Length: 253
Figure (cartoon, rainbow, N blue to C red):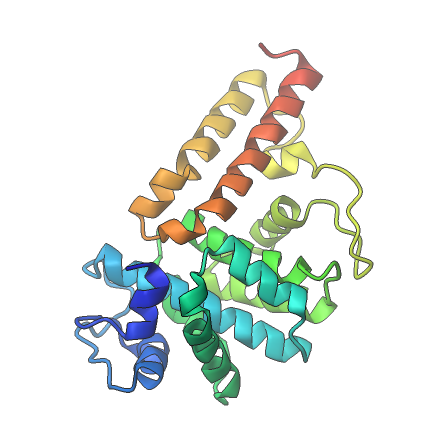
């Protein structure tokens, strides 16, 4: 069963409560029992983390659309393509999306819960933010309210303003406001999160650390569902490209 099927079915034994568990229970038509008081406890299994991660992507995308005021066809198509939703499960995923939009509660509780659950695993949270960035730019335009929404979610996850700016560079490149057009590759040093006067040895060390931490296999071992691997590969490709450009600039072999 795909991760989408598990989310839609409510999955017997799902042990996460809070706003995420309540929404899954509402869509599945039953009450999800919170077997663990703290959604951030390390005892939560990988399967539950994957379900919670996927639900958070759907919910936060729905809340972002609500903040923006509309959902475009391109955004829906981006959601379908990148996240590998089987055609026979698309309607049910839409049901979760619509339920999240319908609810009067804000996005903060969902963001805080998933941030707590993946505390100490920031690369997984970065992938979730990457998913929101991807959906936001899918129609060729990015509304300022969408950028602000992702920024606020990032801060609730525990990221700093510096972290958010770096992630915006990675996922959006040199995107120019709401016109929807980039202007070349993102700044390589910002992607690698190093100053330009960093030594060659430190550049290599920074790259190796990022490549190791952001490898799709590493992310899946920490709770990222396999269905999100395309986005993870794209991020790793951006990191690799940044390193290649720095090597070429410096003549590093």
